[in-house]
Structure formats: structure tokens, C-alpha cells
Image (cartoon, rainbow, N blue to C red; front, side):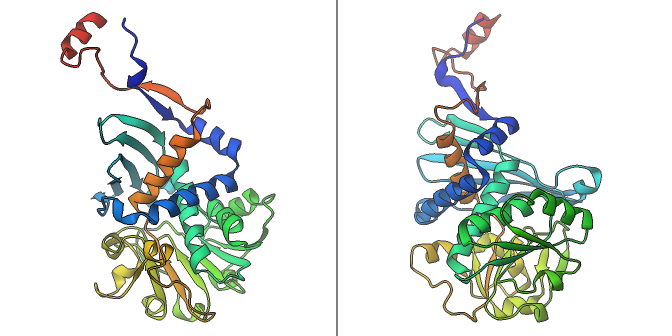
Length: 347
């Protein structure tokens, strides 16, 4: 049987190899490096094709495609969101992603993105926090202690200098899990019985709950002046976490307004409510935090350029390593016009 040519093999990063790569680099270092790639790509925002993610909703959850291209490389992520999965012992979110060369159309990377999405989400949160959170921030409330929570805590430790996290979840077992995982992280970990207790003394409040419903995780009276809210749990139509009055008191920052108005916290507001795009803050075209009393709100829903950045980072990180497998996924005959002949020779 004819062996596939080297040019037809696509690097594939499995879950096992992704975990090996993370351990090789280190969680906090990898998050910081992904954040640097995201920041670099946000600063060239206008070079990307942009579209809201393409959803397929069902009574059980949502399956989405998140594509983008900078004209040289094309990337997409396949991701699902099924909050009911937790009760069945399954992940709420799973994902994989692909990079391709625009010139040839050939894939250049295939990778798991369940683990990578958690890393890039944390990297995005902390990157934005480095622009918007009070510079003196040392305490973060982590409300929602599911699969994303530890990554978020470590990201804000590495990039924003927090030294204490206050944990709350409606499920005490989730809080116990998160606290156990962060035991040797260098963070002071405080478990809390109510969200009001969790936000006490916090300069940063991260909300990351899974239920697909209009929820009120934070009420208006819970949010005092000067805090930064990292709202990452409202990420699809019909799913929010914050009382509307909090939005009206906050300066709101988003990734891509056309998508956030459909999926984010601001779906509760009128369509023309003013928001600031983070790429404009990063390029100096818009103002971020102005003073110590300003409430900043990052209404994060995740955007394809962040996944593109993460894919590009992985593509670079695996070069010269054993953290991938060459995958024979392209029919690439020696004579490109003789695909049938390739099939016959294989027999």
C-alpha cells in the first residue's frame, strides 16, 4: 500500500498530548503566552474576517461553528454547549479546532479544544482584566466553580496579581472540588456559602455558571463602585447572569458587538446601548478604566479570533516536540488529477 506523502500529514494534538504539552509548559505560563497571542491578534483586529458564530439550537443545547481568517490562515472551532450534560456525568462544553492554509486550502493543524478553550477563555479574561481591573486588585470572587473556575483563578493570579480567591457555587461539591484543585496554587482560597459572602472585599468578580436561563447571580445592591466584573457565563441567547440594573451602572466592554448583543448580558438592553470593543482599548483608540469608582464589565461570550489565536499558539508550541501525531486525513495523490488511480493502487 502506498504510504501517504509527508506533505499530506496533518499534525493532530489529542487530549492526551494537549495535557502533556500543558504540563511541559506550565498552566500559568501557557495561559500568559496564549494571552500574548490574543493581544497581538486583537491589535490587528481589522485584518480578520468577522462573523457571529453559527449556532444550531435544540431543546438539549447548542452546537456552534466559530470561523475566522486573517487572509493567510483560516481557522474554526466546533463547540457545543449542553448544560444538562453535567447531570449525566458529561462535559457541558466540548470542542475541537482546525487551522488551514488559505493559499492551498490544506489543513495545517487539527486539535482538541475542550482543554484549549478553557485555557484561552481564562487567558482572554485575565488579559482584559489587566486593562480594566483596578491595579491594586488582590481578591477575586469566583461565582460558579465548574470546569472553567480553576483556569480563571490561575489566570488572574498570573496576569493581574490576585492572591486570594473567594469561591461560591450552588453545588457545595463543586466548590470543594475547586478549592482542592487550587490547594497548592499559591492562592489563598476561601470557600463561601452565599454569593454575597463571596464578593466581600473583592475587587474582581467573575461569574461563570452553566444554567441556560435568565438568571440573577448578582443583584444590583451587591455591586459597589470600583469593581471589575468578568461576566463569562452568559454566552448564548436566553442565558444571562446579571441583573439589568448592574449593566446600566457599568461601562461595558465586549469582543464583537454583533455577537454579544445576541448572546451576552447586553441582550437584556436596547440594541443601541453603548459598548466599547476591547480591540479599541488595546490599540489605544478607546478608554478603559478611568478612575477608582468606575464599574467595568467585560461581557464575554468568546469570539473566533481568540480561538484562532489559541490555534496559532498551539501550532507554534508543538514544533520540534512529540506532543502531536501526524494524521493521514488528506487524499493527496502524486498526480492531483488521478484520485481514482490512487484508489486502485491502494488495492
